[in-house]
Image (cartoon, rainbow, N blue to C red; front, side, top):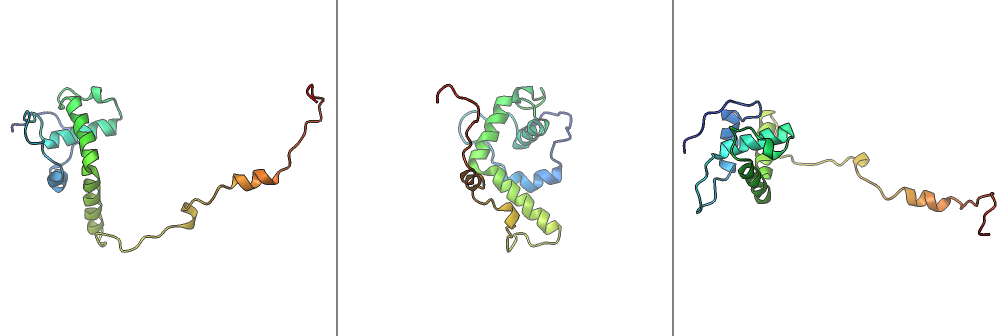
Length: 138
């Protein structure tokens, strides 16, 4: 499929980055109208929109249609594509740092574990106070 020439954005994937995740990104579904944009163009448009934080309708004119980009983002979320990409990138980064690809143990810090409700005991220990001012109801 011929790709349109467009200018490069800082959020675009490099050739090496694309090669690392290309097999994890699904092509268009079989049947129906053929896809007008490549998977790489769609991933680049998704990264542009998410990094910029703007509305989908504000994608540049040289990107695929915003409806297509948003649809594929949501479809890939539902299919777990982003989780697989994140896991593969994490494993590659750990290996690059000279560590085992998957950690063998995890540590949970006691400061990060939330304890029970602290306010309940404090509220129950305080006495009810009555107003010393005259009340119209008593």
